[in-house]
Amino acid sequence: MKMDLNSRSIEELWAAHEEIASILSAKMQAERVKFEKRLIRLGSKDDLAGAPGRRPYPKVHPKFRNPEPAHQTWSGRGKQPLWISKLLAQGTTLDDLRI
Image (cartoon, rainbow, N blue to C red):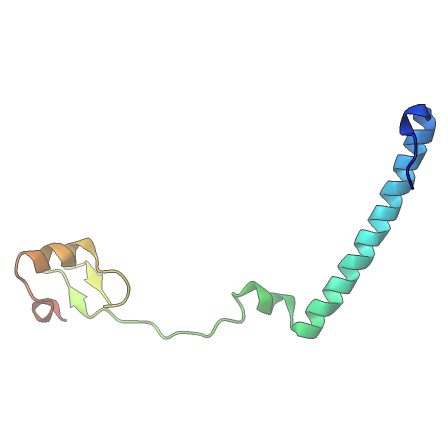
């Protein structure tokens, strides 16, 4: 359906705009309701966000301690801290740093 919009008056164009906007709003609301129903069937919305559905992990205790500032510790998980890399480069072993 092709319309010659240039020949229409501003009032006619504005009325068409308002009609299109209301139809579009109604269709978007219907899609939102349909989507929310699908989410409910799949599970709660919170489960999809990730946080409440996460498995609880136990607290990981430190396994290595820096001898100089003793407050620096590392559990052995993840990337090695810079202080461990420096001490290993100086010849210290991980067993020397073990708590």
